[in-house]
Length: 333
View 1 (cartoon, rainbow, N blue to C red):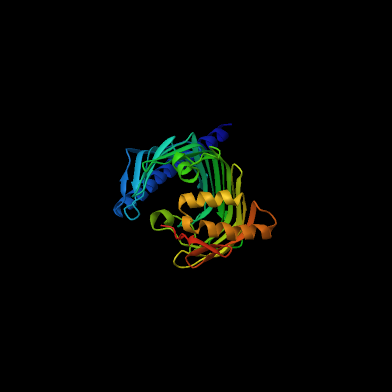
View 2 (cartoon, rainbow, N blue to C red; view 1 turned 90 degrees about the vertical axis):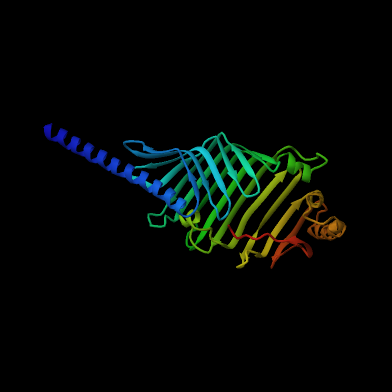
């Protein structure tokens, strides 16, 4: 019995020492990372940083944090930010955000309110902490911009994982339920007030190739360029409007996509009218676009449902044979 007690005491002491060493290392690593960003010219502010969670967790809490990247002008601030990890599995992190936070760009400030925002992150045990898998859950989101728009969603789920058998490629999926487009977007697209107040659902399932693996350099250095985009399923429903797309795209060095997506649009005439009101399609081209798309719809066998290729070539986008505008660049900054 005495020997058993001694073994228990020794094991408990050793585990306690391990936790203290691990907690100290975790705190120093977090402080060191923040100091390194400050040395690079970032604005880094926080009032307190502590690690708790004895005996089985390392719970890191940073209070009154603000990070600003001078190169991009992006800034984020929150009353606190928390990272949790099991002491015996430090490469699996759980992150939680407060109910209020602020994200700012050089052009606007966005106030973010949520009832829940949490993420799970697993990284490979390497010096660069390459991403293995990650999931994010956001509930009760409301966004208010200083530029005059607001938006929100009841629930958003997103996930990313390394694609099996493909280097520097990741499966990325997201789903948003009951998306609130906001008054500014509704005023731009739906001046007549014919659409519902909410978008019933948005779904995105894709495979994305990058120029390098996703790792700590995404935060510390720069974002890798997208090289390929395999859209397995992208769809959205807003009232009677339904849009669905899938297909493969390659991305050139300038960030422009090249390739073709199979597009299905239900009630496409209403979508065209929204695009004209939003300025995505010039008003003077609307009649010609409707005539051409009507011909494609009849070939599809339905007046209201349109099946047509959405083609990206260089910096241009074509719906069937009809040019509809300049393509956005997909390079991440």
